[in-house]
Image 1 (cartoon, rainbow, N blue to C red):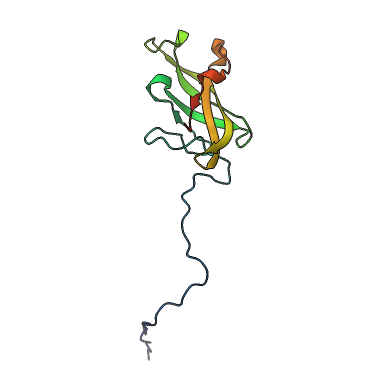
Image 2: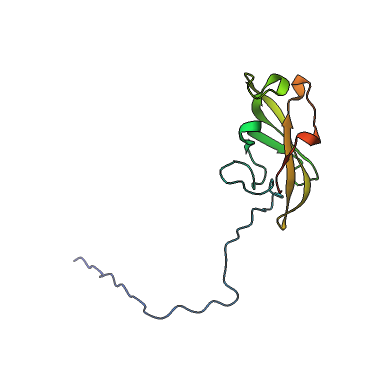
Length: 141
């Protein structure tokens, strides 16, 4: 003799219990536990407004740095290494070659009410270049 049990399903129509405390609102801040962002977002240009961005799009005049790995992020000056288009003589129309670049994010301070790196630049030390603050992009103007 076989016995079968019928499954029983119950549905509750009781109102949900109220939640104590303020409502939970998702954060819209770009700041994370990993440190301050690189400036503020610049629309479609990659890297800006991000924490430790792997890519920075410097636009038509500066180009794109990819594969960036960072050191000392959150300190006064963060240094990264990536790959960018090197043009000899800093001539915009000169043919270029992809090469290793040193990226420096600095000038940590207020950027529209949030702490962020306010300037960034990159250079090619293997081609005799060095850090020059005067070449840095302003990220919070």
